[in-house]
Length: 435
Image (cartoon, rainbow, N blue to C red; front, side, top):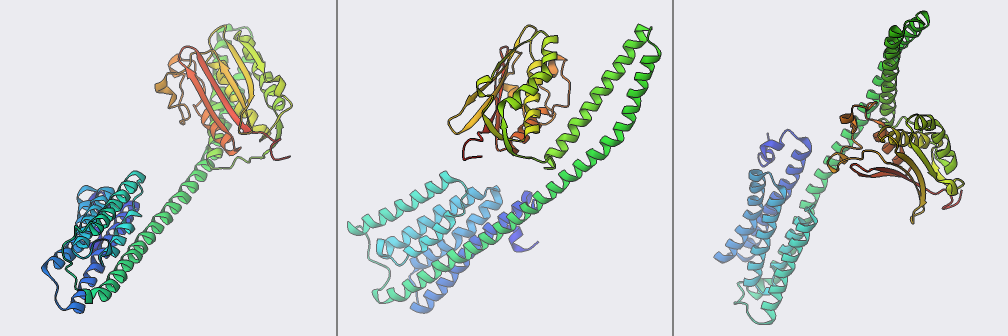
């Protein structure tokens, strides 16, 4: 462990990103102290001897950044440490300027160090607050100068040119060196984040490959089980009890096959292996095939269907013809699955001001509570589980969201518990910008 690691909070030492961030802040703060120390030596050589109050001011400028670094280590809060350092620096430099000429003081370039620290704040309100404090200090020095509130300057007029040169060079050095260390360490953090993202993408692709492999491994014995069950059903046509048991095996096997397909498709979507072909697609080519697929289930469950997209049937949107049907079919299937007996499913379309077309699938089902709506687009979230009628792995809406976003669209919903839900997808109109 080097000296910089000593300033890193112990809980951040094992986190490479936070460790790099803390080390960068520490180097910037210690650089300020080092440059001010060099300035003190230069001023001492230039003037030979300084007043005790000048040594006090230099000590304040040197120790304030060190105190800020120690505060960060003790509290683990970079923001608190930088705020304290900035406030301390503004107070010390304002006091120095008060004693050496006010708004015309040679100490004013030292405010550049505070400006450099302001640039390290990622919190906008704190950045604005610190900027206002600095502006207030400058305004106070201006008023003190023009209204004659200042004491006699501690700096002899003959020393002003040399001291101003020292102050400007030192302040510029603080800004450049502190900015260099911060920029370099931020670049290291970005590089590590980039490497982490690449590793995550490789892991996602490996997971997709594993799911494909396991899907094939499971599918072969599953198909054998289903084949044997069908053969037994054909061999025992007259035994109702056996037929019922075999039918249960077939249904369970088909359900397991659907789960495998969902997991495989989810792996492809996460690994970006699902190819997207964006082209103009008519609304009728999306809605009509999906309605024809779910209509038998609608009739079986005696649900009313209302298709209000007729007038928009010829309008075209930018989408992948196959994948957008998959999304709409998933929304329709959910509207049927979670509906109540004698309820209805409504499909409607509307134009949005920003040149999008919205396709809405609404149902009169049980709806969702506000507390559970946050889980809706989470993987393996099965919001109807409490009803005992949910089938699937809870991946359909998550896949729908990712597919729609890859088609440059949006997906959202509204739900009222006990009254029903409305899901919609927004797709860009193909007529906009030419086809």
